[in-house]
Length: 65
Image (cartoon, rainbow, N blue to C red):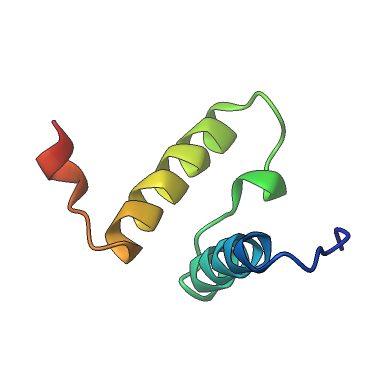
């Protein structure tokens, strides 16, 4: 586990990232760090994380062009 800081914003960001990881695992989706670095599968998972994050923020990725 990474060293946590006491600054509230950093804790919020850390919690948000952990939440995304947990939700993706529960959905049976791989997280990028679970895949080999430089692989096509990891690149796809990284893009999927971005899309999932946008959706969690209430942003429809298709609206971005």
